[in-house]
Image (cartoon, rainbow, N blue to C red; front, top):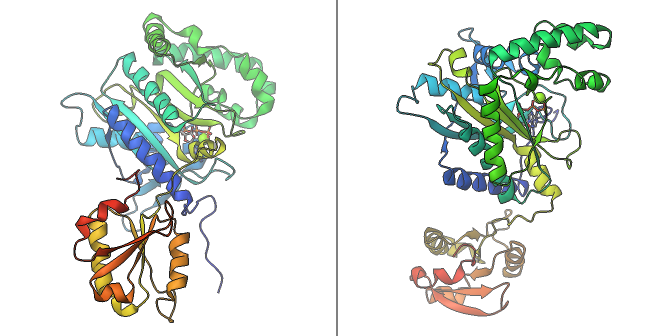
Length: 431
Ligand code: ATP
Ligand code: MG
């Protein structure tokens, strides 16, 4: 029969690689708690209209990257979430979460975009995101950037640069848009098909082009920053001031527009030179109009999302060693008849916090010889073997044998009094 495989661009995450994922997730949870951001989990499937309205009709995601389908039972148009900001905003509005003030939230999970799979670009990929809703001030933009910056430090990442821009407010964008259309019309012969199509629907998006032939044209286009009024400029300057005061380096990138329509004022990306062309590891900005656009009570908001696969790739590139969670103890049970009682001891150890890997039969020949089990114990990385030998077992005892520090040393312990000696088995990191 033909072998079934995973969908193209959607990856299995297997051990030992999955340990890196857990390590990263644990770091993120701990850091989010330090910044007082709370976890939110929204459905992976949302009504298609949420993304069409939220992200904008003329965006890469909505035009060509969404996995959309019709619910077979009721005909509803549904989409696998390509990002999580729209879902968070929907949830916040649906549950009136801002009734008693702003909320700081974070999420982690899979996102889906139908893109050409390549290094750092997948069809199911994962994002970790942070969103602060209900806060208009520049200090929250800055806090979110400092949060991301703290995460890079926590993860030991060095080659990460922050790029900043301001998209201003809608009226400022309108003035810029008119100037942009006029400019691109003057150079219509240099526009590719996509740009021509977007010229009147979403000319700002042309600045986001990945077409190398259009780079110099885009480089010289009118810059939005030159159209910003005093209030927008002040907001932007405050963000910069806070970053400067905290020693976070940044560069102004006037071409940074981001892939969704929902942004205003501050936008930013963290980029690295170490990952080739998929060098953006995190992006975000302010989206004060999104909640209103999807039918909620208008409220300001700002957030970012990072690409987990790209961040993990960068961690790997850095050669950062990640401690795999190894067992403290490997239980060697040469006689299958001892299994029920041996497992009582094993369970007692686990209940007291010791990590125990129990030997299990690999085939019909049973548990295997003492020698082969001890070999497994060595290979497991455990610090100790717990040997349920016949003589000791008869006395209600079990042998604890050191496998690493002071390897070979052994001592008999009472099977009935696990609490009396379990602490001696835990690795220092865990104790
Ligand atoms: P790009 O320009 O690389 O397509 P984007 O602007 O579409 O990125 P965002 O929507 O801002 O990306 O998503 C935030 C982050 O999620 C990106 O910076 C990137 O690290 C990651 N990301 C986006 N799309 C993918 C994907 N298809 N595969 C893996 N990671 C992705
Ligand atoms: Mg993209």
